[in-house]
Amino acid sequence: MALSRKGRHAGVDYWPGFVDALSTLLLAIMFLLSVFVLAQFLLSQEITGKDTVLDRLNSQINELTQLLALEQSSKQDLEDQLSSLTSSLSVADTERSRLQDLLASGAGAAGAAEERAGALAGQLDEEQQVSQRALSQVTLLNQQISALRRQIAALEDALDASESKERESSTRIADLGRRLNVALAQRVQELNRFRSDFFGRLRDILGGRDDVRIVGDRFVFQSEVLFPSGSAVLNVDGLEEMAKLARALIQLGGEIPEEIDWVLRVDGHTDDIPLSGTGRFRDNWELSSGRATSVVKYLIEEGVPANRLVAAGFGEFQPLDLEDTQEARDRNRRIELKLTEK
Image (cartoon, rainbow, N blue to C red; front, side, top):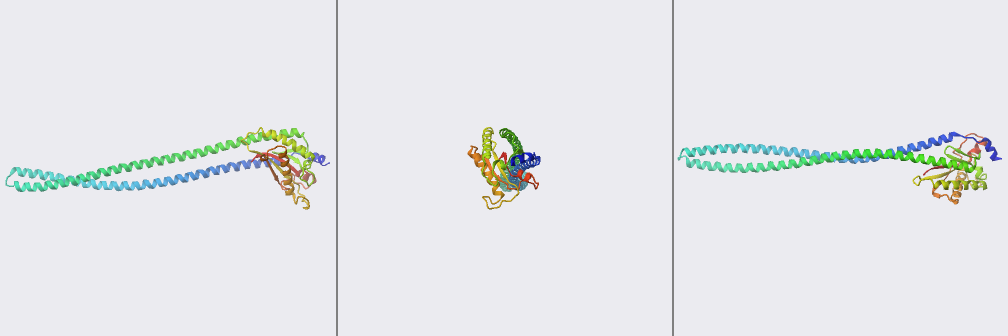
Protein backbone atom coordinates (compact mmCIF):
# COMPACT_ATOMS: atom_id res chain seq x y z
CA MET A 1 0.00 0.00 0.00
CA ALA A 2 2.83 2.37 0.81
CA LEU A 3 4.44 1.75 -2.55
CA SER A 4 1.27 2.32 -4.55
CA ARG A 5 0.55 5.54 -2.66
CA LYS A 6 3.99 6.76 -3.43
CA GLY A 7 3.56 5.93 -7.08
CA ARG A 8 0.44 8.09 -7.31
CA HIS A 9 2.08 11.11 -5.72
CA ALA A 10 5.60 10.77 -7.16
CA GLY A 11 6.67 13.62 -9.41
CA VAL A 12 9.78 15.16 -10.80
CA ASP A 13 10.91 18.02 -8.64
CA TYR A 14 13.46 20.03 -10.60
CA TRP A 15 14.22 22.57 -7.88
CA PRO A 16 16.62 20.34 -5.84
CA GLY A 17 18.44 19.47 -9.03
CA PHE A 18 18.78 23.14 -9.84
CA VAL A 19 20.04 23.83 -6.31
CA ASP A 20 22.57 20.99 -6.55
CA ALA A 21 23.73 22.16 -9.97
CA LEU A 22 24.14 25.67 -8.60
CA SER A 23 26.04 24.28 -5.58
CA THR A 24 28.35 22.34 -7.90
CA LEU A 25 28.93 25.48 -9.95
CA LEU A 26 29.70 27.47 -6.78
CA LEU A 27 32.14 24.78 -5.62
CA ALA A 28 33.87 24.89 -9.01
CA ILE A 29 34.08 28.69 -8.82
CA MET A 30 35.44 28.49 -5.26
CA PHE A 31 38.03 25.98 -6.42
CA LEU A 32 39.07 28.27 -9.28
CA LEU A 33 39.25 31.22 -6.88
CA SER A 34 41.41 29.14 -4.53
CA VAL A 35 43.76 28.32 -7.42
CA PHE A 36 43.86 31.98 -8.38
CA VAL A 37 44.56 33.08 -4.77
CA LEU A 38 47.29 30.41 -4.49
CA ALA A 39 48.83 31.58 -7.76
CA GLN A 40 48.69 35.20 -6.57
CA PHE A 41 50.26 34.21 -3.26
CA LEU A 42 53.13 32.36 -5.00
CA LEU A 43 53.61 35.29 -7.37
CA SER A 44 53.67 37.80 -4.47
CA GLN A 45 56.23 35.63 -2.65
CA GLU A 46 58.48 35.51 -5.71
CA ILE A 47 58.06 39.24 -6.41
CA THR A 48 58.88 40.03 -2.76
CA GLY A 49 62.12 38.07 -3.13
CA LYS A 50 62.90 39.90 -6.35
CA ASP A 51 62.24 43.27 -4.73
CA THR A 52 64.71 42.39 -1.97
CA VAL A 53 67.36 41.51 -4.57
CA LEU A 54 66.65 44.72 -6.48
CA ASP A 55 66.94 46.81 -3.31
CA ARG A 56 70.27 45.18 -2.49
CA LEU A 57 71.56 45.74 -6.03
CA ASN A 58 70.43 49.38 -5.99
CA SER A 59 72.22 49.87 -2.66
CA GLN A 60 75.44 48.43 -4.10
CA ILE A 61 75.11 50.64 -7.17
CA ASN A 62 74.71 53.72 -4.95
CA GLU A 63 77.81 52.76 -2.93
CA LEU A 64 79.83 52.16 -6.10
CA THR A 65 78.62 55.45 -7.56
CA GLN A 66 79.78 57.32 -4.45
CA LEU A 67 83.13 55.53 -4.55
CA LEU A 68 83.49 56.38 -8.24
CA ALA A 69 82.77 60.05 -7.53
CA LEU A 70 85.39 60.03 -4.77
CA GLU A 71 87.96 58.38 -7.02
CA GLN A 72 87.21 60.86 -9.81
CA SER A 73 87.73 63.72 -7.36
CA SER A 74 91.10 62.26 -6.29
CA LYS A 75 92.03 61.81 -9.93
CA GLN A 76 91.22 65.46 -10.63
CA ASP A 77 93.44 66.55 -7.71
CA LEU A 78 96.31 64.45 -8.98
CA GLU A 79 95.85 65.79 -12.51
CA ASP A 80 95.94 69.33 -11.13
CA GLN A 81 99.12 68.50 -9.19
CA LEU A 82 100.61 66.96 -12.31
CA SER A 83 99.76 70.06 -14.30
CA SER A 84 101.45 72.22 -11.66
CA LEU A 85 104.53 70.03 -11.68
CA THR A 86 104.61 70.11 -15.47
CA SER A 87 104.54 73.92 -15.36
CA SER A 88 107.36 73.95 -12.81
CA LEU A 89 109.30 71.59 -15.02
CA SER A 90 108.79 73.88 -17.97
CA VAL A 91 110.04 76.85 -15.91
CA ALA A 92 113.07 74.83 -14.82
CA ASP A 93 113.86 73.90 -18.42
CA THR A 94 113.65 77.54 -19.38
CA GLU A 95 115.93 78.53 -16.48
CA ARG A 96 118.44 75.84 -17.43
CA SER A 97 118.52 77.09 -20.99
CA ARG A 98 119.12 80.63 -19.76
CA LEU A 99 121.95 79.46 -17.51
CA GLN A 100 123.54 77.56 -20.33
CA ASP A 101 123.43 80.75 -22.39
CA LEU A 102 125.12 82.64 -19.57
CA LEU A 103 127.81 79.97 -19.33
CA ALA A 104 128.50 80.36 -23.00
CA SER A 105 128.65 84.19 -22.82
CA GLY A 106 131.19 84.69 -19.99
CA ALA A 107 133.89 82.63 -18.42
CA GLY A 108 133.83 84.86 -15.30
CA ALA A 109 130.32 83.84 -14.47
CA ALA A 110 130.89 80.18 -15.37
CA GLY A 111 131.54 78.93 -11.86
CA ALA A 112 128.50 80.62 -10.32
CA ALA A 113 126.29 79.65 -13.23
CA GLU A 114 127.46 76.05 -13.08
CA GLU A 115 126.71 75.90 -9.38
CA ARG A 116 123.27 77.39 -9.92
CA ALA A 117 122.66 75.07 -12.83
CA GLY A 118 123.54 72.09 -10.66
CA ALA A 119 121.02 73.17 -8.01
CA LEU A 120 118.36 73.68 -10.62
CA ALA A 121 119.14 70.33 -12.19
CA GLY A 122 118.71 68.64 -8.83
CA GLN A 123 115.42 70.41 -8.32
CA LEU A 124 114.39 69.40 -11.83
CA ASP A 125 115.18 65.74 -11.15
CA GLU A 126 113.17 65.85 -7.93
CA GLU A 127 110.20 67.39 -9.70
CA GLN A 128 110.44 64.78 -12.43
CA GLN A 129 110.29 62.02 -9.81
CA VAL A 130 107.23 63.66 -8.20
CA SER A 131 105.65 63.94 -11.62
CA GLN A 132 106.37 60.27 -12.30
CA ARG A 133 104.73 59.23 -9.05
CA ALA A 134 101.70 61.38 -9.89
CA LEU A 135 101.45 59.73 -13.29
CA SER A 136 101.60 56.31 -11.62
CA GLN A 137 98.80 57.30 -9.25
CA VAL A 138 96.69 58.61 -12.15
CA THR A 139 97.21 55.31 -14.01
CA LEU A 140 96.19 53.34 -10.92
CA LEU A 141 93.07 55.50 -10.49
CA ASN A 142 92.15 54.96 -14.14
CA GLN A 143 92.42 51.22 -13.62
CA GLN A 144 90.25 51.39 -10.50
CA ILE A 145 87.66 53.50 -12.31
CA SER A 146 87.57 50.96 -15.17
CA ALA A 147 87.07 48.13 -12.67
CA LEU A 148 84.23 50.05 -10.99
CA ARG A 149 82.57 50.65 -14.32
CA ARG A 150 82.77 46.93 -15.11
CA GLN A 151 81.18 46.12 -11.74
CA ILE A 152 78.37 48.61 -12.39
CA ALA A 153 77.79 47.06 -15.83
CA ALA A 154 77.65 43.60 -14.27
CA LEU A 155 75.15 44.79 -11.67
CA GLU A 156 72.98 46.36 -14.38
CA ASP A 157 73.09 43.07 -16.32
CA ALA A 158 72.07 41.18 -13.17
CA LEU A 159 69.21 43.63 -12.63
CA ASP A 160 68.00 43.17 -16.21
CA ALA A 161 68.20 39.38 -15.83
CA SER A 162 66.22 39.55 -12.59
CA GLU A 163 63.49 41.63 -14.21
CA SER A 164 63.38 39.25 -17.17
CA LYS A 165 63.07 36.24 -14.84
CA GLU A 166 60.27 37.98 -12.96
CA ARG A 167 58.36 38.50 -16.20
CA GLU A 168 58.91 34.86 -17.15
CA SER A 169 57.62 33.73 -13.72
CA SER A 170 54.47 35.83 -14.13
CA THR A 171 53.90 34.30 -17.55
CA ARG A 172 54.40 30.75 -16.22
CA ILE A 173 51.94 31.32 -13.36
CA ALA A 174 49.32 32.69 -15.74
CA ASP A 175 49.84 29.71 -18.05
CA LEU A 176 49.54 27.33 -15.09
CA GLY A 177 46.21 28.89 -14.13
CA ARG A 178 44.90 28.46 -17.67
CA ARG A 179 45.99 24.83 -17.81
CA LEU A 180 44.41 24.10 -14.43
CA ASN A 181 41.14 25.62 -15.62
CA VAL A 182 41.20 23.51 -18.78
CA ALA A 183 42.04 20.33 -16.83
CA LEU A 184 39.29 21.00 -14.31
CA ALA A 185 36.73 21.58 -17.06
CA GLN A 186 37.78 18.37 -18.82
CA ARG A 187 37.50 16.29 -15.65
CA VAL A 188 34.08 17.73 -14.85
CA GLN A 189 32.88 16.91 -18.37
CA GLU A 190 34.23 13.36 -18.16
CA LEU A 191 32.64 12.74 -14.77
CA ASN A 192 29.31 14.13 -16.02
CA ARG A 193 29.48 11.76 -18.97
CA PHE A 194 30.10 8.75 -16.75
CA ARG A 195 27.39 9.90 -14.32
CA SER A 196 24.86 10.03 -17.17
CA ASP A 197 25.98 6.59 -18.32
CA PHE A 198 25.67 5.24 -14.75
CA PHE A 199 22.18 6.65 -14.29
CA GLY A 200 21.12 5.24 -17.65
CA ARG A 201 22.30 1.77 -16.67
CA LEU A 202 20.56 1.96 -13.29
CA ARG A 203 17.34 3.08 -14.97
CA ASP A 204 17.50 0.06 -17.29
CA ILE A 205 18.34 -2.33 -14.45
CA LEU A 206 15.65 -1.12 -12.07
CA GLY A 207 13.00 -1.17 -14.77
CA GLY A 208 11.51 2.31 -14.31
CA ARG A 209 10.09 1.86 -10.79
CA ASP A 210 8.03 4.76 -9.46
CA ASP A 211 9.67 4.61 -6.05
CA VAL A 212 13.16 5.00 -7.55
CA ARG A 213 13.85 8.18 -9.50
CA ILE A 214 16.51 10.66 -10.61
CA VAL A 215 16.54 14.08 -8.91
CA GLY A 216 19.15 16.42 -10.40
CA ASP A 217 22.50 14.61 -10.32
CA ARG A 218 21.36 12.00 -7.76
CA PHE A 219 19.60 8.63 -7.88
CA VAL A 220 16.91 8.49 -5.16
CA PHE A 221 15.50 5.36 -3.44
CA GLN A 222 12.57 5.76 -1.07
CA SER A 223 13.58 4.32 2.31
CA GLU A 224 10.63 1.89 2.34
CA VAL A 225 12.09 0.18 -0.73
CA LEU A 226 15.23 -0.73 1.21
CA PHE A 227 14.45 -0.72 4.95
CA PRO A 228 11.66 -1.57 7.36
CA SER A 229 10.25 1.38 9.29
CA GLY A 230 12.71 2.72 11.88
CA SER A 231 15.37 0.15 10.92
CA ALA A 232 18.76 0.33 9.22
CA VAL A 233 18.80 -3.36 8.17
CA LEU A 234 18.26 -3.89 4.44
CA ASN A 235 15.13 -5.91 3.65
CA VAL A 236 14.89 -8.56 0.93
CA ASP A 237 13.92 -6.08 -1.79
CA GLY A 238 16.67 -3.73 -0.62
CA LEU A 239 19.32 -6.45 -0.85
CA GLU A 240 18.18 -7.30 -4.37
CA GLU A 241 18.22 -3.66 -5.54
CA MET A 242 21.64 -2.99 -3.96
CA ALA A 243 23.07 -6.12 -5.62
CA LYS A 244 21.97 -4.70 -8.99
CA LEU A 245 23.55 -1.39 -8.07
CA ALA A 246 26.83 -3.08 -7.10
CA ARG A 247 27.07 -4.90 -10.46
CA ALA A 248 26.47 -1.68 -12.39
CA LEU A 249 28.99 0.20 -10.24
CA ILE A 250 31.71 -2.43 -10.66
CA GLN A 251 31.22 -2.42 -14.44
CA LEU A 252 31.36 1.37 -14.58
CA GLY A 253 34.44 1.50 -12.33
CA GLY A 254 36.37 -0.49 -14.91
CA GLU A 255 35.57 2.10 -17.57
CA ILE A 256 36.35 5.32 -15.67
CA PRO A 257 39.99 6.45 -16.25
CA GLU A 258 42.32 6.10 -13.27
CA GLU A 259 43.08 9.83 -13.19
CA ILE A 260 39.44 10.54 -12.22
CA ASP A 261 39.33 9.99 -8.45
CA TRP A 262 35.62 9.19 -8.23
CA VAL A 263 33.43 8.04 -5.35
CA LEU A 264 29.79 7.03 -4.94
CA ARG A 265 28.31 9.04 -2.08
CA VAL A 266 25.44 7.36 -0.24
CA ASP A 267 23.30 9.89 1.65
CA GLY A 268 20.68 8.91 4.22
CA HIS A 269 17.65 11.18 4.86
CA THR A 270 14.66 10.93 7.21
CA ASP A 271 11.39 12.79 7.72
CA ASP A 272 10.90 15.39 10.47
CA ILE A 273 9.13 13.13 12.98
CA PRO A 274 11.42 12.66 16.03
CA LEU A 275 12.29 9.15 17.18
CA SER A 276 11.19 7.99 20.62
CA GLY A 277 14.82 7.57 21.71
CA THR A 278 14.11 4.18 23.29
CA GLY A 279 15.08 2.06 20.30
CA ARG A 280 18.41 1.35 18.69
CA PHE A 281 18.66 4.88 17.28
CA ARG A 282 18.28 7.86 19.56
CA ASP A 283 17.45 10.38 16.82
CA ASN A 284 17.10 10.87 13.05
CA TRP A 285 20.82 11.66 12.71
CA GLU A 286 21.75 8.16 13.85
CA LEU A 287 19.01 6.54 11.76
CA SER A 288 20.03 8.32 8.53
CA SER A 289 23.73 7.60 9.12
CA GLY A 290 23.02 3.96 9.98
CA ARG A 291 21.03 3.40 6.79
CA ALA A 292 23.72 5.00 4.60
CA THR A 293 26.38 2.87 6.31
CA SER A 294 24.33 -0.31 5.78
CA VAL A 295 24.13 0.38 2.05
CA VAL A 296 27.89 1.06 1.83
CA LYS A 297 28.80 -2.11 3.74
CA TYR A 298 26.57 -4.27 1.55
CA LEU A 299 28.06 -2.77 -1.63
CA ILE A 300 31.53 -3.61 -0.28
CA GLU A 301 30.39 -7.20 0.35
CA GLU A 302 29.22 -7.33 -3.28
CA GLY A 303 32.70 -6.36 -4.52
CA VAL A 304 32.64 -2.56 -4.80
CA PRO A 305 36.04 -1.13 -3.63
CA ALA A 306 35.69 0.48 -0.20
CA ASN A 307 37.78 3.49 -1.24
CA ARG A 308 35.12 4.34 -3.86
CA LEU A 309 32.28 4.68 -1.32
CA VAL A 310 31.23 7.39 1.15
CA ALA A 311 28.38 7.20 3.70
CA ALA A 312 26.72 10.36 5.05
CA GLY A 313 23.68 11.01 7.23
CA PHE A 314 21.61 14.20 6.97
CA GLY A 315 18.75 13.45 9.33
CA GLU A 316 15.62 15.47 8.49
CA PHE A 317 17.53 18.63 7.56
CA GLN A 318 17.68 18.24 3.75
CA PRO A 319 14.01 17.65 2.78
CA LEU A 320 12.84 17.38 -0.81
CA ASP A 321 9.32 18.47 0.08
CA LEU A 322 8.62 21.19 2.69
CA GLU A 323 4.88 20.51 2.94
CA ASP A 324 3.49 19.34 6.30
CA THR A 325 1.79 16.27 4.83
CA GLN A 326 2.24 12.52 5.00
CA GLU A 327 3.05 12.41 1.29
CA ALA A 328 5.85 14.96 1.79
CA ARG A 329 7.28 12.94 4.67
CA ASP A 330 7.21 9.80 2.54
CA ARG A 331 9.23 11.55 -0.15
CA ASN A 332 11.75 12.91 2.36
CA ARG A 333 12.57 9.44 3.76
CA ARG A 334 15.10 8.35 1.17
CA ILE A 335 18.58 7.10 0.22
CA GLU A 336 20.39 9.18 -2.41
CA LEU A 337 23.30 8.04 -4.59
CA LYS A 338 25.61 10.64 -6.11
CA LEU A 339 28.60 9.89 -8.36
CA THR A 340 31.20 12.59 -7.66
CA GLU A 341 34.91 13.25 -7.11
CA LYS A 342 36.76 13.07 -3.80
